Length: 289
Length: 218
Ligand code: SF4
Ligand code: SF4
Ligand code: SF4
Ligand code: SF4
Image (cartoon, rainbow over all chains, first blue to last red; front, side, top):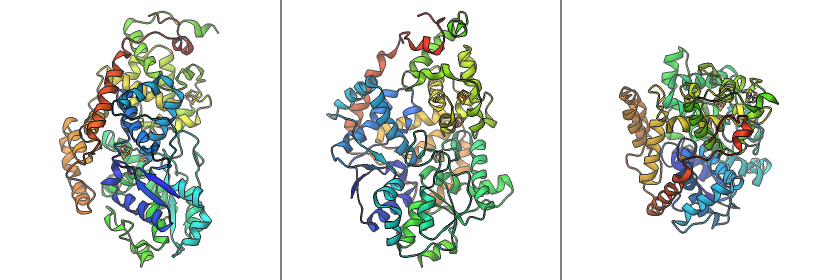
């Protein structure tokens, strides 16, 4: 199976390990991932900008480029996933906007007919390949590892997508099949604050505190995420969180592709585990030994 | 129902705000469902940050319907919403609260309401510029510009240790990537900006009645 890959800005730099591990896992599972040539930012500004035609047109340029290739688009960043899907839906539901956006695209000789499917890698792996097939390819067992699966808010909302909006299970089932133990983690889809970390820091710090404290309290060895920004928010401020709340808030925060990569037999560096901001304990690194 | 008819005549500024808002609602499919809110408070109860808001999401809807957009635009609420969609997916009458809050945010930015303590606009503008210049979001430049423009240079210093760690792990680009199709992207943006203009002045459309106010006359 072949897919068009839309890494998004975060994966090219700040979330490099997520990019490395996504490519490595797809390769190890025999799936083709072809980076969309000359993609531009998805236009997550859509809702921030006062000029919506501009934002939707920026987003639609990617979809127009991808449409020519006739493959599904895989977008690992939750924000890209949401924005590209939303652009698709708005262009479908609002003919007037569609006309304007295509008018703008025509300035560069492009046209978007609205046929591209934008998918999250988690959903692609689980639905196109299947958990059983993935488990069969596993070279290492995750036995003894206790994990809290954190989906964040934007891959299961606002549209009924590939999993439940309140208590998704895709990742839980995947890692259970690979031998890990899932701890009770009711905050699976609770927001980490996203960009509030920069614009309303206090509020976001509280949200991140709750997410980590809940995982710790239920005995998790790590939190596993599906989004660059979730991982960043939870991993990058652990020192500040510990100081602010007077508790030890240190905990490894992995991308699901990293842990999956380890189970598939890839080494720690290939999946990017050496480039984390937080400490990755021996218990996880030894999986790759 | 009588109460849907007319709450009286709105002050000039309020009807102007309402018109601006409704033109934004325009781009939210189903935006006119606002009228159906039953004030159950599910949105507020589901919101992870309502504790930090001055107007709860439920109250925002109530105030809007009562013709008090002015207060909403000056509230913390629109800047604190993290757009997590928890309220939207639980609302029993399927009001897209998150998208409406976005629309209100856009109206506020359009009216130059820019609270210093929530510099969302600065981030947003820096972001738009980055995409225009490079085609991609240049995070390093973006954050630096953001902190400088929001007069929180002290935060920039606080971020320094994190920045160093990211540099060491190769996760911070010192130079932006510029996409090859940059010229194309510029053309698209320029054309889109042209198209955008005729939106003003906004015609009064049927959606006004849908939301419940016949009081807004052109
Ligand atoms: S959402 Fe973020 S990462 Fe994704 S393309 Fe847009 S700016 Fe880049
Ligand atoms: S970063 Fe936070 S706000 Fe964004 S999707 Fe992840 S959980 Fe939600
Ligand atoms: S959940 Fe929906 S119906 Fe209930 S108060 Fe909020 S907006 Fe109104
Ligand atoms: S989208 Fe905004 S208002 Fe709604 S629950 Fe999330 S933070 Fe609260």
